[in-house]
Image (cartoon, rainbow, N blue to C red):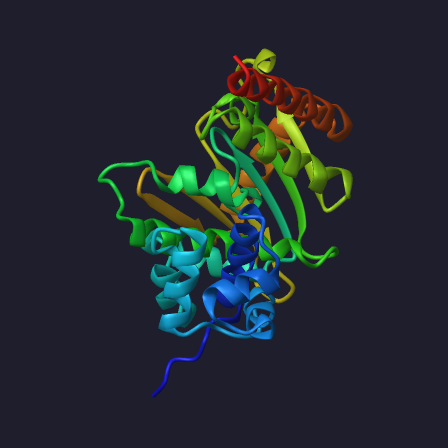
Length: 279
């Protein structure tokens, strides 16, 4: 039986192609001429309506100097690739109508920019090959698509101030990542609350948690550790974790003050990046 394309992966592939094309300063027409492809075909790939064949991908890699990214990305169009312990949680995330998440160090995956995600996925031990990293990257980009619908899921994100201060990939990447969160918050797509360092001890010191609600399924909680993760389904446990989350939320800054803090830290990163460029 033939494996059908994964539409979400095609869309992520197209987004990455567009990002790299624009970074190279090329129009679709200019790229089509250099890669010996029709402009219409490139437009369909960027829109997620078509997948390139192997030779297309190789030419795109060559023209955009992508180091083989687009060729390595092709197999991910045929299915999902996620860490085994996160596979079920990722599927539930797509079905959720409401999500509450606390992040202690890193920006939650579905809020990560491609550049931030690439840096996160390039870290760790044992080291990942470029193919392994790129496979994980496409899944990370797919997860962001749950925010495409303005109404669902309803998302509340609680961030430790450490998330804002932990420098991933340098000042410029951090500036763009934090401004992405601010944009989502200002557009009312998500609610953001920051737990400042000055709070001291709080109810979620033990680590990150994600709570998810569904239309027809019981709510669940997902707790992740190093190379491990566990989904809690007993409703008493979920309610207990929800209470812990709300207790910590009570110590956090308001949505408005949180956005102001994130915006301020982003500006600090911007100034730092400018100093790095013009010492």
